[in-house]
Length: 283
Ligand SMILES: Cc1cc(Cn2cc(-c3c(Cl)cnc4nc(-c5cn(C)nc5C)[nH]c34)cn2)no1
Image 1: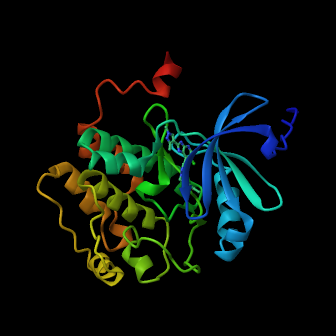
Image 2: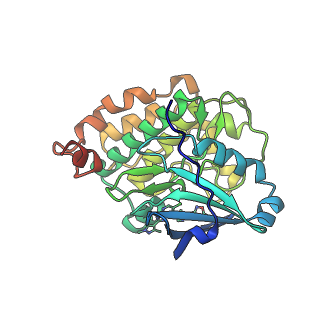
Image 3: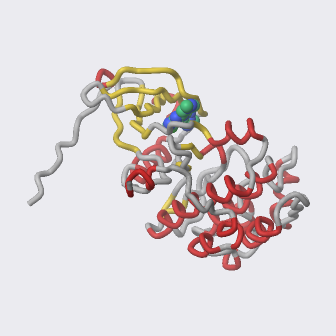
């Protein structure tokens, strides 16, 4: 019988707190080092009163329950959590190159090689989630991080749920990534992530999401009509994948497990893969 690994009890004093890495709607993230092991992680701190005020405790509990049981190279690890009288803390994997949306805003847009590698890695993470009957439901650059070797890490599982489901909580924030069935508040399943993957592919290559409009109502209309205009500089192969993912009918959307063999991914796969962790492992 395997000796069970004792689950360590953490508290704030278990860590040396470093610089603030970022802040979100509900809290802040700091770089932190575990005093006992020297391991560097990211500590996400949220005020309990804020979680209660914004009525997101349930979402928060779901984020912990789902993300702590996931093991995939393109999904940010949640190692543990703890709380004190006013705050809750998530002990998260530290992503060495930071937030995807900041890199995208800085670069404007990505080329086919970089964008296709990111999309292929995200498709791999989504395929892993869907096999566990989990849909992410909030795929967007703000919820992506980049690891030390340039690999993508899916994070923020606050909106993820077990399929099939129909949304009960009011959406807040951008509509840009929502598929027709969600903006029309219909029942939806894991294929909502396929739509969002199409939106993400477009945003990586163009620099803004495809249905973006100043007013929510206008965005809603363009999503519902799939009013898609792909700029001429987007490659034929990339445009093909975008169109195959941004299908109004969920059942017509391109399946995740065929993405690694799509011409856009195959054509742009570097012959000598970048010097990533897998390389180091194989020596
Ligand atoms: C609350 C709240 C804020 C955010 C957004 N956010 C995520 C991070 C973050 C996480 Cl969770 C993990 N690793 C990170 N590494 C960085 C980072 C690395 N460099 C070189 N620069 C940065 C920035 N940020 C990380 C920070 N903010 N989500 O919920």
